[in-house]
Length: 173
Image (cartoon, rainbow, N blue to C red; front, side, top):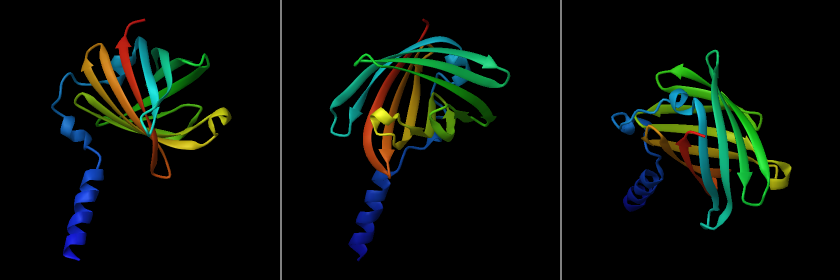
């Protein structure tokens, strides 16, 4: 029984997510409002859980302030020729906390920034052509320098990992 408890504890520790505060001292500090103001280009891919690349895409993002909200207009172009548009409305909550929403996001997205990192979680309603499921996203964004950010997101349903999105952002249009 003792062995089983130790094995279970080791297994659960291996499943634990990193703590956002472990990045508190990492530089440069990520301020989403500062990074996303103006034009940003992004490119990335979606990989199924077996690692196979399912789709590649580029994104043109324009960020602006509307009062206290950071508004991100995103225009996606996928490798199969399809397009998608999403508008995020993000609000700083203080102490590095963020909330946001978009038309295809169920409820509020919640995030927390510390140091050069932002941990962002939300539920996304997929289009009917892509199953129509609601899937959970667990995003980790890391500022590399003042112009470059990397995002790695895990997509899951009922706690089962469906795949990953890897995305690179570069300031400027």
